[in-house]
Structure formats: C-alpha cells, structure tokens
Length: 176
Image (cartoon, rainbow, N blue to C red; front, side, top):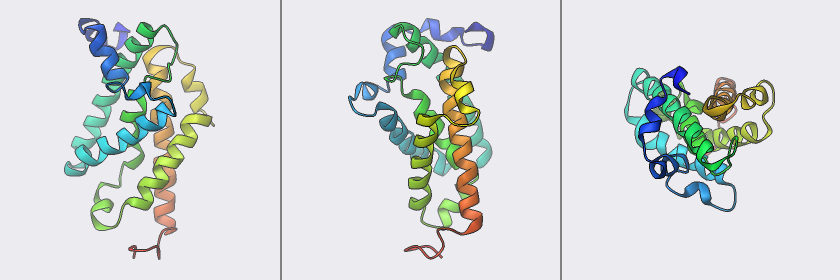
C-alpha cells in the first residue's frame, strides 16, 4: 500500500477509515449498496463539479480516486474481505468520471437524460464487468477496488458522448 504514497491511511483511526469507506453507514444498506454509492456519487458530482472548470474538476477526480484507493484498501483489510460490497466509496468517486467533458453541456441543456443513462450504464458495467473491467477487479487491494469502477465510468463516459454526438436525445421533452 505504501508504494503509491498511501501510508497516510494508517494514521487514521479504524472508525474514520470505515466511516469513509462505507460512506458513513450508507454501505450497510441491505439492498444494493453499490447503487446507493452511485447515487451518492451523482450528488457528489452535482454539488461539487458543476461549479468548477474542467482542469480543477479533473484534478479533484484524480485526487478523489487516489484517496479512495487508500481508504478502500484499508476498509477491506479491516473487514477481512477482498472487495466488500459495503465499501461504496469507490462507486461514489467513480460517478463523476462518467460525465467528463459534459460540464459545459449540462449548463446549456437538461442533463437528466444523460445523468439517468450514465447511472444505468455505470451500474451495468460495474456489476457485469465486461471487457477489460473484470481483469482490473482482480488486482489486489485498493487499486483493484477502485480501478474497475473508474474503468466502468470511463466506458460509460465514452458511450454518453456517442449518444450526445449522435443526437439520440434530440427531440426529447425540453431538449433541442
């Protein structure tokens, strides 16, 4: 874990680590904790990323992923599992990656079709782990826990851009 400058996590009390990894108890939700983490990620994106430019947004996304690697790794170790379903910080920090390049668009058009489609696609890729995503999930520790979610989000982002460029949502209520 210390290979990537993640030794700082050891300084945090176990309760703080689990609080962050489980998003303050949301990961203990009985039904679909990953879905809950993804919904919280949409809120995270809407509250924080909508007001900043692409450079700052990209920096915050990368910093969040780096922090999540350490927290998810330590949370998994504390829980004694490889990738516990209750650790949902990885889903949360991955959601903003779904919307890279859409910051300017969302101010000009209704975002709800893209957010809804992004959420659904992300969950499908995160659960089914197609393509190379499944291989990333097999990486040990926090890197594997976070990498498959970020990869799922980046594939989602690519598909959202295809949908936008093809104009598949043109003509929907409120869209021009």
